[in-house]
Length: 174
Image (cartoon, rainbow, N blue to C red):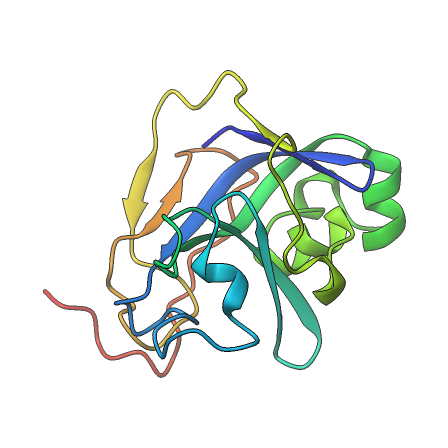
């Protein structure tokens, strides 16, 4: 958390991510390696980009060892450089807070689409000051393994997206 990611003239400070791996029923890699998910199986440091809901792109950073099918969804961040380019992609009326607050918004602000699937991000992700604290909790917007505490965010950061439990997810375990 707090790392800087740079692409296409925009730099974002990450404030929220979600983890996924091959043994996780919510992961795209759960059913094994396919043409669509091949990037998730390594090597680490590459971008896995997918299209969702027929209208948005989302981006994951592959993070596991070769062959493991693991990635981290880049959920939210603060645009710290390239504000003009991000605003051009997201719209003039979008507030600074909402430019990259949510995975589809972040991907759009960064200018990522399916053509970036497999893009080498080594050298484009770098440590910053980091985060003083990081919280973990259930992932948002999924129906399978919704209570797995693999969503990580910087507490109190205004650039973190709102938690939304998927309406079809089973009730939270007590």
